[in-house]
Amino acid sequence: MAAGGWTYATLAQEVEVDPKSVERWVNLGRIPRRATALQAAKALGEDVHALWPALRQARPARAISPELVALYQQRADLPVSAFTDLMAQARERIDILVYAAVFLHEAYPRLNELLTERAAEGCTVRIAIGDPDSDNVQARGQEERFGHGIESRCRLALMHYRPLAGTPGIEVRTHATTLYNSLYRADDQQLVNAHVWGVNAYAAPVWHLRRHEESGMFDTYADSFDAVWTTATPVREEG
Image (tube, rainbow, N blue to C red):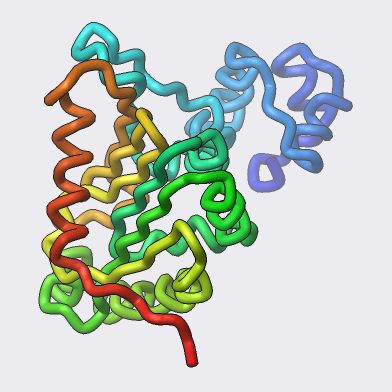
């Protein structure tokens, strides 16, 4: 708005809303109706999803598979609450398979508390993070043009999760596998973040699965987690 010389009043007049509404968009992060957002984006010469990422809708995918609940163009389209709310609903199992995924702790500092609470209620929690010294983690850094950043983020993830080691019902391990997908499972639901060569995980697609049948898509990824888990090394408590 500043670059284009727009004021609350002039943009409001252009899109036919009250100036107070525009002020709330800017100062309070309110999201307009889609039709209004499209008008505003056109007036400003901006992409509507760049202005309001929350307006990016998941694509219905049931016609492809009864297990595929939704497909997201990139992980950045999902709020962190999509991951934490899924975990909060778990009653039996939470499985996390990543290299680092520090975005979870960065955006939701209560993650360890949430996992501890779920474990105390009877959930089995398994967390597998990347071994920063492994060849595969280092190769991923080169592929994503992230350099040593991925190794550093794996070490940071270990720092975040290590306090959970030794907590009843929770086990943390490090793995050295080639990671084709990051997995976030809560009972019979799962978020799968695909990995694309040369692309950071936040810009790669995510599909939301709900288990529908034995040996279906959901079980394929669940079995993949189990296979990695058997190769992973337990993280010990500090001290």
